[in-house]
Image (tube, each protein chain N blue to C red):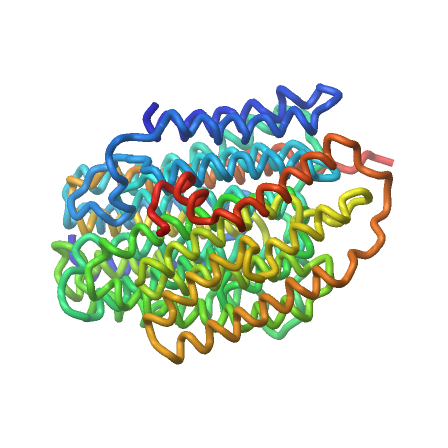
Length: 419
Length: 209
C-alpha cells in the first residue's frame, strides 16, 4: 500500500467512522477501533526504501516514502489514540474524525520528500486540530492554538520555499529559512515564547481532544524535523538548530518550573510540554544520542499519555500512580533513559547547554515525583469497569517494560539502533 | 507585466486580505489574492504558473459558496458558527480592523526587505513578484495572528496558502506546478470548511411574536 493510499484510507475512515457508529449503544469502544485499525494498517505501507526526510529533494517531485521510523510512530500512535478513547470518560465522535484527518496528515508528513508537501501536511494537521478544539471548547486557549500553531504552519510553508536551494554560505536567504523553520517547529511543539496555547489548552481541553496534539501531531513534527535536519544545507541547518536549541532550552526551564507549580489536573500537560522541549533540545544538539533520547521520551509519553491525559477517575488511582512512576525520571523508569540520552547529546554540544538541560531535568523530575507522592484529588462519579481498569494496568505494564528494556523496544518500534 | 505594477496590485490585495470581514470574507480574500498572485507567478513561470493561484483563488470562491448553500439546505444543528467571534473583544481605543490595518502597514517594509535581500529562484532581486508573494503571506499571517473567529483563521489560511504556492513557483518555475497546486488547494479547502460550518450552524431567525 502506498503512503498516499494510506493517507486516503485515514481520511475516509474519519469521514465514515463517527456517523456510521453514532447509533451503536457501545459507541465509545467501537469508535476506538478506527485509530487502532488505521495504526495497524500502517504496517502495510512500509517500503524497502529508506525515507530520506522531508527536505531531501533538491529537485521537484512529490514522491511519498514511508520509512520505518514513521511507520513505527504511526502504529504506536494509532494504538495510543485507541487506548485514550477507551480510557476516556466520554467520547463524542468528532474527535475520532479529527484524529483520522490528523493521522492522514501525519502519514504525508512522515513520508514527504519535498519540503512544500511536508509543510502542507503540517498545515492540514494544525487546521484539523484547531477546528476540533475551537468547536469543542470555544475559548481564548483554543483560539490561541489556531492563531499561533496556524502561524507556525504558515512559517513552515514559507520556509519550504527557501529550502531546496539554500546551499551557499550564511546569507539573508539561509538565515530566513532557518528562522522560519525554527519558528514553525517551535510553534507546533509549543516552545517558549510560542507555546502558551498548549499550556492553557492542557487544562481547558478534554483528554481525547488534547490527544490529537500530544499523541499524533507533536510526535510527527518532532520525528520529521529530526529527519529533515541532517539533509538540510549546512548554513540553514546551523541557523535552524541554533534557534531551535535556544527556544527548547528556555522552554524546558520554564515549562519544568511550571510543571512543579501546576495544579494536579494540569500537571501532566505541563510535564509533557517540558519533556517535548527537552526532546527538541536533543534534536537541535545535532548529535545522534540527543535525537534518539528525544524519540525514547516521545515513546514513553505515547505509552503513559492515554492514561494521564484524562482527569482522574475512581478505580484508576493506583494505575495512574504507576504511570507517574514511569515518568519520574528515576533510574529504571521509562523516562529516565530518554532524558539521559538527551543530556548526553547536550553534553556533547557544550557545558553551558548541559547545565541548562540538567536544571530542566531536575525540575521535570521534581514535578513527576510531586505527582507521584501527592494523591490525586477524589474523583467524582462511579467506579470504572473491570475491562477499563485492566487496560489501564496494561498501560502501566507497558511503561514498566519500556523502562526495563528501553533500547530493545525502541529499536523494534523505530527500527533505529539505540545501542 | 511591469514589476512595479505587480507590487502595487499586491498592496491592494493585501489591504483587502487585512480588512475583509463577513460571510464572503474567505472567498473575497482568496479571489483578490489569486488574481494578483497570478500576475506575479505568470511573470516568471508563464501561463501554467499563472493558472495555479488564479484557478485556486477562483475555486475558493466557488467552493465556499457551494458548501454554504449546500449546508443551508440541511436542517441547522447547534454548533460553532465561524462568523461569531470565539471570545469577546477587549475594549480599546482601536478596533480589530484598525489593529490589522496597522499590522498590514508594518508588513510593507518587511515584504520590501524580503524582495530586496532574499533571492527567490529565477526572480530578480527587487522583484515585484517576490514582493507580492511576501506581502500577501505576511498579511495572511496577520489575519491568523489577530483572528477572533474561525472565519478569520480561514481567511489567513487561504492567503498564506496562495502566497506560499506562488513563492514555490517563483523558486522552482513551471516544473513545480503539482506541488504548488497541492499547497494552493488549501485555499478552497479552507473556504469550503468555513462555508459548510456557516451554513450548518447558522443562527435560526427568531420566531415572530
